[in-house]
Length: 72
Image (tube, rainbow, N blue to C red):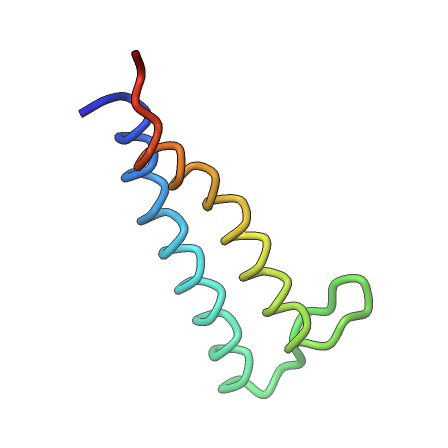
């Protein structure tokens, strides 16, 4: 397995773990009746959408490179 593929297969669990951690943090704040953290004055739903979009857009090039790039 090439180095790029290893990097991709290492990044996928990291991405999934960060998503689980984010949703876990949101759920714990709901259970504790604490307000969600606000970043740039956005609503919690907008923050979640931006977090997922940035995570996916950051990992997509790595995934594509690992699956389709073959060194000569």
